[in-house]
Image: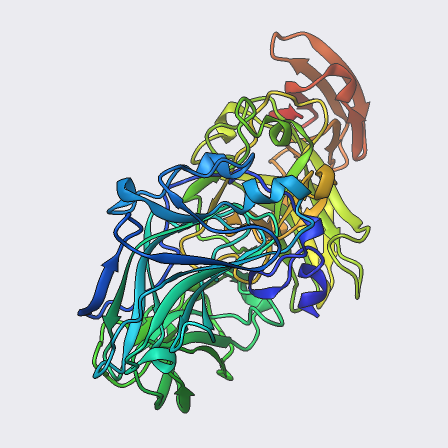
Length: 594
């Protein structure tokens, strides 16, 4: 079910439907995070490091198309890749290798395939070294390309090993990142080993490599790289979930063979609550061959039954490198009312309205998430963090839209509920703003909903930054959904694969819609409001109602012996005082009109 919704723009594991997206700068203001995982074991250098200086001999080959690797010190210079800058490798001043896919693809608007190799022309003797890897410094920004290390025993027949497979569209590695590719099964023990690099794509950004070595690996080394406490294949992984929405936990873990021999071992798992075992655990035998990576999924059979922070701990028996023999997933916090994908407002995400992406910033666009409830439940509001950089007075819409059953996020959706909202100074920064809908809306079990915050027309030059997080596995399930001009030729639609989770949480707290009744039997609601104000009359008294603005000017008067309502939208947004006097006494309540 789930893939129907997310694959309209992107395919799983980062393969992009390329007509659907556009190259752009990252909308992220945050510290960088590690994007490549390599074995922490000590390695001995067998050969190298090989640089791209004049004394080294590298051969370039064009497999398809017209574009080739280059060697030099110049940075990428395509219209989009120019912003990357050159790789800051150890010997970058003495040349590095680069495939500037963006520059090369501009000549034909990306219509010609790009497939090219660069390899070290001198054979390397690896006699006696069966467990080996190619280790190099790399810098790559992804759009629609594939990066490979290639290896051969004759320099003619090559086997490719993918690298940088976890880089999201429009994201980049650190500069540089030390990258390792296990080539034991290809050239381990060979007396005529060849190594190189292959780029395959069409009008990507750029890839740069330098300082290449062949290093030894331990014979027996499995690494647990990452994992999930939720099913990201057929469902979504949540960071928070109301107790009413709990479901059996399905967990997964990625295991990589980082050694030189095929490995069969026991993978153990344990469901934790607040860091302590729930008593639900198990194990299974797994096999991972040399140089391979596999994901193993566990149906735990455990359903949380109380509020708390739940995770799954995975482990394997100790091998020759023990630092990555255990992994604990991020937590699922079961609570009373909130459903979320984020782990707090750890960063700020948005387009700079005065920067290079001002066109994106000024266009209508939205940040949000996909939610699929387990049972029917009424949503009463949205919790949002409006990050620093957001403009006070910005006009927004908070929305809940249902994805068509069997359809995708790019099909017309049905608006379930929405409310407009104007940013106040107190909303910006670390504050959490709860936006209450005019009336609750029912989310139906098994249906998918996009819950987002939309910056609408007429807000040119104003900042719209959303809090969020990317510290764990927040968007591995493609649950982040953003609306805007991100398609080919700036086509406007919904798109996924953003590599972070915005702080836009579904709030099922039914007390949000219940007005507070004072001792005079009067309740004034909703607050804030878009204009219409309701005044209850629980005791059936004669209520004399007077509305004042902040200067004390009388804006409206009314007498009612039953519940009543009136519309303040014609007076403009601002703060109003609602005075209600009856036989019991007088009450005054402050109401904000958005």
